[in-house]
Length: 167
Image (tube, rainbow, N blue to C red):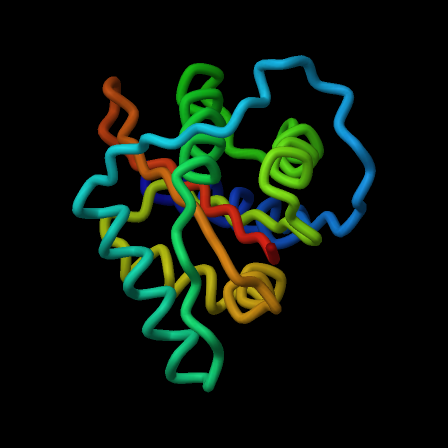
């Protein structure tokens, strides 16, 4: 059982490393009027703690802290809900999310980190920092971010989506 879990975690880690997404295209979105800016988002203590950890790391590297944007957290939450519903860990529809953020918020670049099954924000951050692509996103030339962290109600495992943008 533990060996299967380790294999699964290794596979998920490799997939996440190879699929760290970034989009700097400024193409206009073909999405409909549902791309209106979301103004309200209720952050959990875990989400706020994760954002603080990311900003503390950035500051320790001499980088600017990122400002949270509710719309980006809402787009992150949509993706977390998708992953939970479909029992997957992936960056599916990242292009649509990034195009929405470019169109609605005027972002110049957008990137995304995801994580799965980390019980604490520090554990998720440590994993992202151990991955070259995810670390580049955390330490990248961004100004804003959004995040969503939700537990699968069936098994309690946490899904993370963290979106970064330069606006």
